Length: 94
Image 1 (spheres, rainbow, N blue to C red):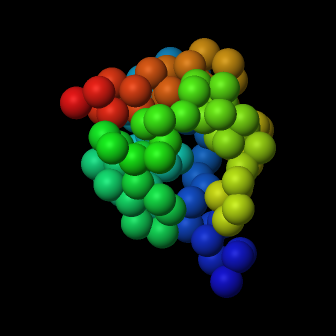
Image 2: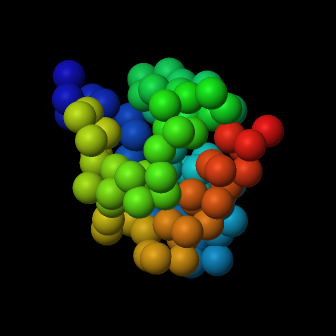
């Protein structure tokens, strides 16, 4: 089952200039939903536990993985990670 979840949530590395939204759609939406409402993974949008966490928590979670979530450290550079978190924060703010 864990291999299925990892496979469902991981895809090729995003383009270096990809927007935060494109990165989210490529790497995160399969598990966390197109609108950050959750699915296989927990919700990340407004009112979610994620919205209450500091950016550093999100960085560590994305780069190292957490629970069933795989690590994306080999998929993202620092700028892509910043754009992804900025996109999540924008959606969380409504």
